[in-house]
Length: 65
Figure (cartoon, rainbow, N blue to C red):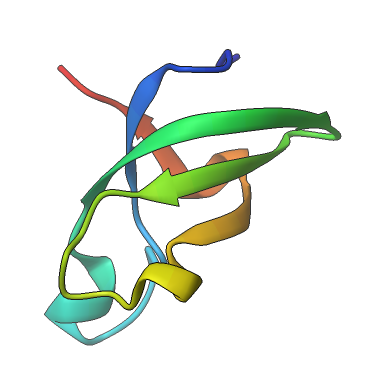
């Protein structure tokens, strides 16, 4: 569904009770892995640089409207 360099919204825990865990963060697709998984780069300065690259499932991503 997504391609390399697509900008998306990443939601770490969509079903969490905490608003901060459900808050969408802007991210870019770095690599398409198959099986609806991706490596992304989360564009959030509050996250340490070494933790911004993440392997995620497609269900945790949304289009930026």
